[in-house]
Image (cartoon, rainbow, N blue to C red; front, side):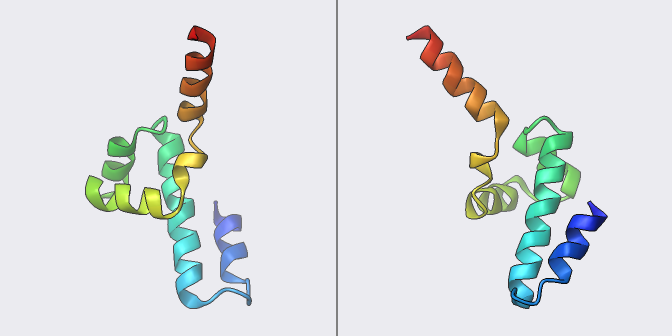
Length: 80
């Protein structure tokens, strides 16, 4: 994790806000992985409200990275 954050901080092509967004996204993904992609638990882990967490989850497009969604889709395809 430290290496990823340092990589983001050292990127001269990103503005200050873009760097903060990238670090925030890294923290959220790490919390989601620790909590089996359960958003409420990840929000509690980061000490933010579920509402804020869910807003940023959508903002950063983290649903595309969610392995649980992919598994759910595959299950629906198999059951058809």
